[in-house]
Length: 313
Image (cartoon, rainbow, N blue to C red; front, side, top):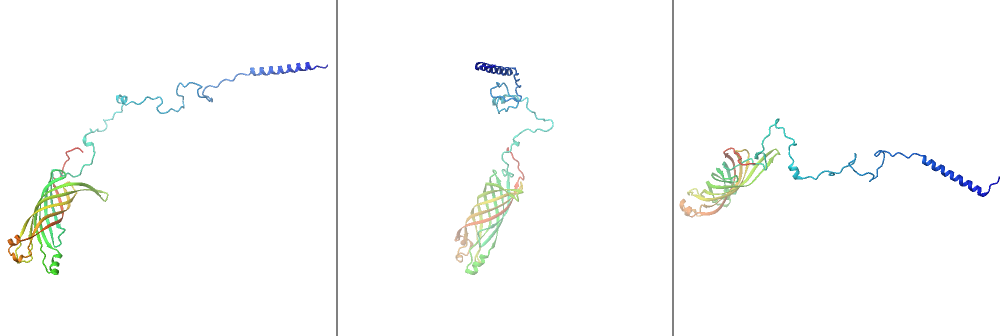
């Protein structure tokens, strides 16, 4: 049986419609997938859920959600919750001024104490006659840096080599005087205080003090001709000097210093044969300005031998 073209087209359209209907039925019959619970292998995008709290594992920034610090609130807070010290098992000492140390105290005080110092001295600038002196000082300290005192010393002379060489070579005898004793009223001032280490183990404290005073000195001429009598002079003697003191104990110090005793001395006149008597020779004596520079070494004994601080540290 022969089919026409119109019939063939009808059967082709029918087959196509049946295929489409079959495909739609299969898709509607498949079950819908069940959504997974939140938080299990699900990637949540920003904005999916409103943030109602802090999730576990979330990083918190400093200060987030905390109140601002307030000094007035902290000061007003009661201290009932503070940890209290256990005073039953150890002794609690009260705080006082003695427990507050600002500057180290000086290991030696001189205020109101007396310095008794025997010393030895020798001439430093006389090339004809060397004088060796033995004496003592008594000084009372009005403050820790200022004192007033008296001193006295006795001298012994010995001729040095140039004294004989001048007579032998120049055929002339030198004109020299010797000193017998001296006394003075002195003032001492201490501007410098320090310390140094000995072998990095022991500390030695020291101070420098300056001296100024006025007194008298007795000088005596040494006649060039032994047949003539000698005469003596009482000379007004200002003195200045600088010394160092080393502290060994509370009652003992060692002192070294240089003093310059200044005076105008009277010497035997050059024409002594004209003035044979001592009084006439003294009236016609030659004068000269003298600086008698002496090195002194002494040991000080302090009275009372100890001291106490009366002020706070």
